[in-house]
Image (tube, rainbow, N blue to C red; front, side, top):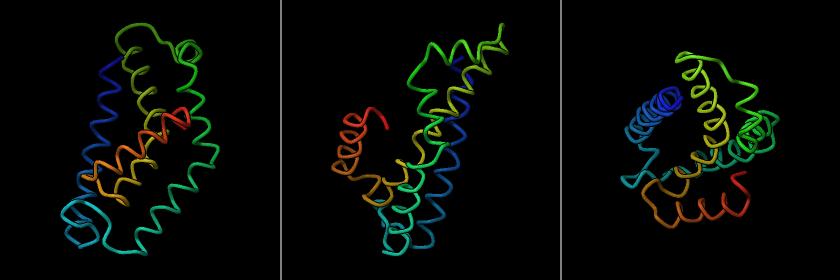
Length: 128
């Protein structure tokens, strides 16, 4: 199960790294990986905000909030079944988190205050 989860997040990390480098080359991100362009910053905020209201976000949250139901619904026997279960879990988890991760570009990926504020917000909202 862990391998599938790891694959999902490894692919996401690779894509995010390429995107981050591409945005930095176009001077949309500072050396601290903070947005340099107010229009781009606003677009990221709007995108993250809109996604929070979508049915996809609610579906992902529901899968993450009830792990017993998730296991029953997605269980498959064997090693392949475990990989499937981990992949499905990773995709639902990614579905919950990717838009919030965009906000790190708004506040700065290396900004400890931004990371702490997002962490506190997620704890207060139950990882919503």
